[in-house]
Length: 502
Ligand code: NAD
Image (cartoon, rainbow, N blue to C red; front, side, top):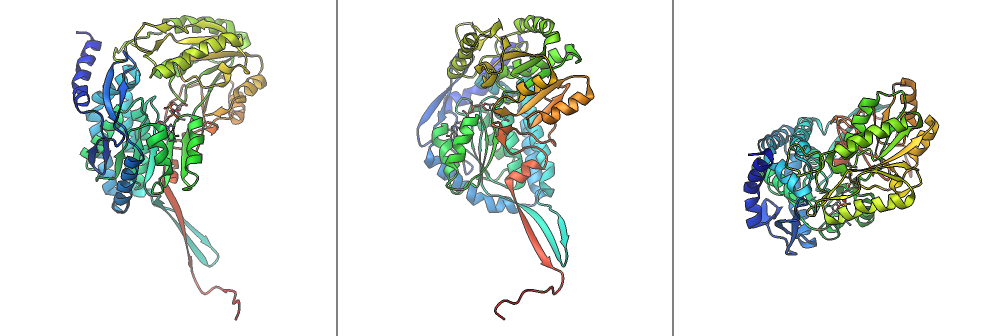
């Protein structure tokens, strides 16, 4: 039996209960139907129905927010060591069910097994990392002033809303939920409507691990329904959101009346800049990996290649050869490098950019066509000869779609790199140390890798500038978002107080 057939057999067994009972909400520890009925989730692989999903509305959000509010005092007051132990148990259970999570995620999102099998384990690592930091999360500083001692401390902000996208839903949900729980917050999670499966698995795992009822609540539904209601709910103190920039802008407006604190991880149009003095073989590997892995549905993807004119022809020739050899196929086949796009709507958007690129006058050097007649498969696409003013050089396509622009000088490369609305990541390939320091200092991006693809290290700050986001995750930065800092000042003696009206 092939590995694909084996994976399909296992997936079938895992999905049986969802086919029979649907994907339900989980509120206050109870599995509940949605008050709006159900909606359907389909696999991008063959468009088949995966399951009926609870359609949550403002009523379910209200119930979940009240459950999170009721659970907050006890969870916030629990000793850090106890919270740490529960979060480690969650990580243990994620590890023990990593295969199930990965199989479901591939089927639900179209992401290839070779990447997703590790994504579930990265979710467990997120829990472990923040679990270990839970006991010290409240610690602050002692700041002495003349005659006064100031003590700072941090306190969980309250119930928070977490709204996640469909591209790598399990990893991204754990990335938000783990620090929130470690800080002592309770959570209402609204996962993306296109990929609800792994959020249900996560909620079940958390409860099985001993998370008290109401500490993590799951409400499925649409962005404009459950999502909007969550951002407007007065009991929800903050919204951690991962998704498109224009949705972030809507959430900011929706949350204005209740003065929501927001943390946004949004879109990107990230440059990878290749200078002629770089290790070009390694640069080529990284360029390909950072746009065609995860189907290019990756906020940190290097979707703009800026290549120096002196090496452009040779670099493009090698690139085209490799892009044409990328293995597009069933996401559960371990050989597959690129799976189907999440949904017809997204497939239409990505393939629509092929026509836009042609009309703009760029050269379609590879791909751009549909693969097969079922499912949302597309040949990995490369446009060369683009200029920075073109739409394919400015707009986030969010697919296996690379736009290449040629530059002559470092100054020109920097202008092009910064000439977009976004600023999430940047990748720089050069062996000139001084240039690397100078260029990375001036590059408008929250995260920059030099002579490397994106390698995530949990203690480092993750987030973007410009239209790519507000706030940072990772390390202690996550706690700054989920906690309020309090300052207490103590007089050390009888200092002089002005005696008004005396
Ligand atoms: P999206 O913005 O369409 O949806 C994300 C989530 O927001 C979904 O759960 C959706 O239901 C919800 N939503 C939609 N409208 C809402 C509203 N009015 N109020 C409240 N919630 C609402 O994004 P997507 O298409 O699911 O995901 C792709 C996007 O996510 C891309 O732009 C990508 O770059 C971005 N992303 C960013 C990061 C990062 O770390 N910066 C990571 C992954 C994905």
